[in-house]
Amino acid sequence: MVSIATWNINSVRLRLPIVERFLKEEAPDVLCLQEIKCQEHQFPAQALADAGYKYQAIHGQKGYHGVATISRIPLKEFSRHDWQANGEARHVGVELLGPGKGMVLENVYVPAGGDEPDREKNAKFGQKLDFLGRMIGWADKIDRPTMIVGDFNIAPLESDVWNHKQLLKVVSHTPVEVDTLEQFKQAHGWVDLGREFIRDPERYFSWWSYRSKDWKVNDRGRRLDHMWASPELAAQAIGHRLREDARDWEKPSDHIPLITEFAL
Image 1 (cartoon, rainbow, N blue to C red):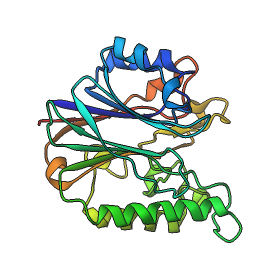
Image 2 (image 1 turned 180 degrees about the vertical axis):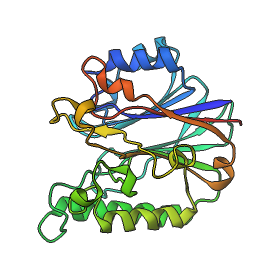
Image 3 (image 1 turned 30 degrees about the horizontal axis):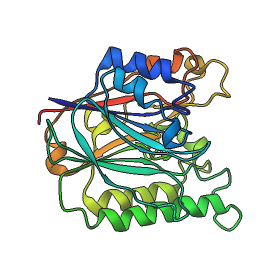
């Protein structure tokens, strides 16, 4: 069995204690982190190696964004795509070399897209759609078993948000974003693993705003984090779960970790 986890950690140095807690409690084989918010030389590589995760692929930048994949099993860096087309560190791909050998694991942090869902009024929204457009072109050419995980910053289904009607004009759940993400899905025939195991319309959120004073009572969540796989790889998935309790840990991220297990 191979277990893969993903988590937008919102500053890995600030939240290193809860990363270490998660690794101790869940012991995934691989953890993909987004929004590490540090340069590669600032990444807590030794602390995570001491926790058993000595295989690492880090793509960082100063203060913002950044992704890292850490593993207990051997891997090698496979790719770095600049889907933002401006040099931002938002992707790193690895190939597993131990258990799960040959599997490609892509770790991505899709731009949030700003506040106004109009590319004419908000350049960030246009950048988000263009980012996804480049991902679509890439996905169309994939020729091997691949998994893509991370913060997609889109909640595609009505049941992926706390209130579908209220969020239709809110960035992350607008029809144009949902349609573009569906184009990405179709470009490779991706299987949405989360919704294979937690079936629509069952409640499934991965993010709650810091602005909500009591996130559990209000429960205004959205499913922004995803784990998708090529059909042949998805067929080997045997479990999927999320650690919603992590949203209550000390100095929590606004996202929670997701874990998928494969019988590889």
